[in-house]
Image 1 (cartoon, rainbow, N blue to C red):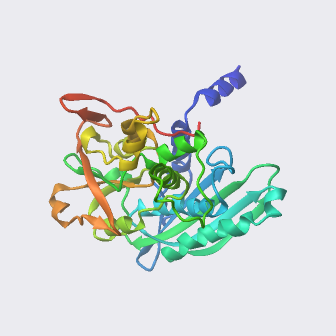
Image 2: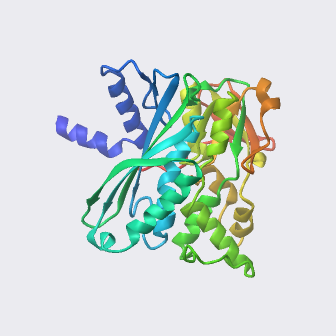
Image 3: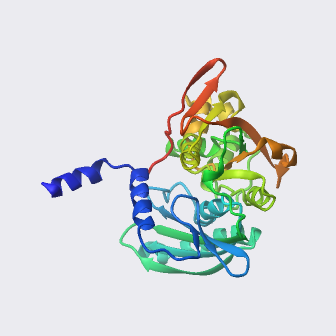
Length: 352
């Protein structure tokens, strides 16, 4: 009877329930005095004797779950594999330093130039941010590609920005624009394909240009490392999270950790202009893509009103938009559209 009950629990539990269980189990184990933060934020924090904290994060990409071989290229995949972990370090307000990559590939991939091009994409992004590859592993898999990326970063002792720091009255911002990655994924699922890596963009065909740009937002996203450094080193943000699961879900994560609520203005959400342009012709809702789509890898962060004047308008050419405010109602997240206000459900991506 207990075995049946355990099987039912496993079948019905959600991803984040499982993570919370791991968090409780880890908290009950003997810890190390240098561990400042573990499960619950975008990266762990370890105290160093030099006055620096080391941050460590790890991410997996699994073929047929997180990517499809026929809709991407090896270079794009190498770039994205590093992006997802760099984005986590940026979401802690830290500087990325080192990376480890482990690959599991089937024989046909190993016997092609796929792995070489994968690392070309990886190093292209790593060199941009001064990240050194210091190790990893490679193994054979029966059929599918599996990628595991670990990135370590650093920040001054006590300067890491956690999800739990948002306070009522703080203003909520996002970097860049939202919905582009989700729209790109929908287009790829409907048969769109991007040209080879080296092919120049076709600016004479507006539709083809839009398809390419949105597809690349999904296949080759850029992490907001510069914004993360400014927000952390200048102590501007009270909390940060990267938008990987979707604005709705990631805002819920932040509010849950902070024990606060939030109110978002739908009219202020910076929807990617290309998404708005293409959605009307393909029966897609741009607001839903921006709220729930995920994998934009923008930063969602909160700032105390007293620090608003110190906040730059752009970093590395990327602007920010104020989309709402933290409210005292614990963990309640609302969306306002004119005079209408309703609860914003966390409908972003979940693995299980």
